[in-house]
Image (cartoon, rainbow, N blue to C red; front, side, top):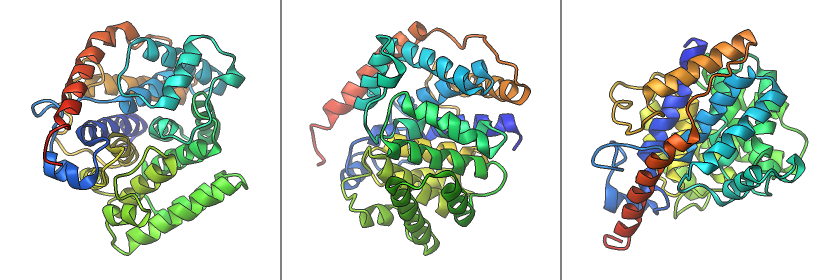
Length: 349
């Protein structure tokens, strides 16, 4: 894929994984299977899919890359502005750490007090588009550090996001090779106990995938019987396991991680983002996303502008729409989410 197609693929693959996984979020795998069946089609709203904060954040990162041309300080300023607008658009279902950090951004809290100490999935769900956009590996780390520390200050959140961005970067040019990935990741990570822990877990995921074990079985080995949690060192290894096992089959990889249960929209978005940068999305999946601007056309525009800006070093200051324009959509989304929540009060359990 060329650069624009890699960025677009990461955004669209992430959106499809997010939309497929969203109805299953928070359900244990056994109950999800009984209640919803296989994640082989959109089940959010009468055969249509909608995206959550996972895709919204990926789009914000693409916009920040376009408005900064990848320059780190300008990227931070642009992402701060984007996150402020996003919080004011009344999003539903965002993580607690991201919500607290976002409110601090809105209130103008100084940079050194913005993030909260959390190893949640927020930074990882923003990471694939960075890996898809940069042209040199050394560009990844400073951008990931900025993106992570705005909201999460636990090093584990940063290291997990770095793993996602690197996997995406490598998959742009060749199917993801676990051996190459682990070697490159080790060279980027510092000497820190949390980094060693992540490398150990990811090496285990790679070996499990090589043996032909399913992602569901791998999650069970990690003790995640009720589903993949919102902890980055659970979600990212499960997502990468699915990528290691199905590097040429995006949709199988996405569906395999969703059936693990738990934080399914984020896990699906991460897998879709990584593999979408180098693996074409099968036709049809993009057509039933019920989104006013985060649809294929809107994501392609963001991808094109981000790619051009970073490649030329010329920032694109054109706005991608105003956050208040998403308020009606977000209220509709919240209503549908509440209907799903009410449905879960009833059998099958």
